[in-house]
Amino acid sequence: MAIKNLPDIQLHLFICNGGSCCKNGAEETTNIIRSTIKKMGAFANVHTTKTLCNGRCDDAPVVIVMPQGNWYKFILPQYAEEFTAKLLNNDTIPQQFKLYAYGDELANSASIPRDNQ
Image (cartoon, rainbow, N blue to C red):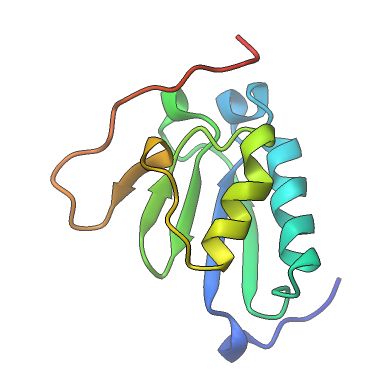
């Protein structure tokens, strides 16, 4: 495994791989996010960490982006590549995926249709 130069890290993605997230494809989502980061040449600047449960099972799979403190929901495998590309290009992430941002008063509880249910 490559050793990262920590001062170069601009984003840290925490990708939930707890039980509910894995049932909804989190392992594949994690692999797609990581491959997209490499494909876009951002490996030196973006770090990813697989976590266990982040406590938002109804929103699975969940990705937390630091240092911004943005939480994203329903990052299913079919959305993972586009989500990652938008994130790395500082494009607007569709509102349906926003769960919470530090400072918000409420979490976004709206749901999206899931192809695998």
